[in-house]
Image (tube, rainbow, N blue to C red; front, top):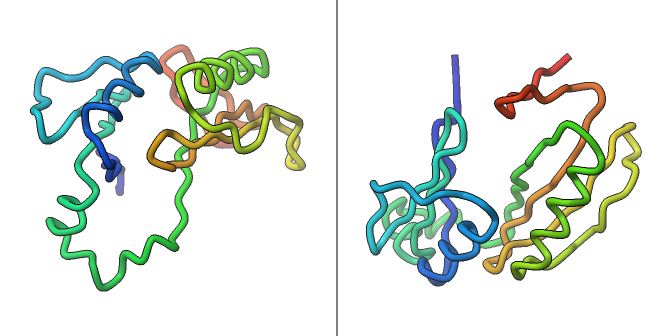
Length: 139
């Protein structure tokens, strides 16, 4: 079974990006170093690594044009939590791309970009509940 164990974001300034995610409520792992920060997210990890170092390490120059798209999602158990998380993100410096609102698919969501431009969707999906550990169940 394929499981994503870690998502690494290429960032312009590791210290600033780390401060943003700590202000968002994540706890930096002791495994972090000056050149990389790690945050435990349930059964997976969020990593922050210098953008240029990540480009070089992955030999991604030929395919990493900056035009690809990826959105990270944070699913929550209700609409009120979506509003709270979006307000918190804006307060700590995120750019709100789409304020929380009813979604065409029957849920409720909004989008923000972190200071490095990584896009996050914050959503409540009544068709895929979230348990007390933050695990989403697809139906």
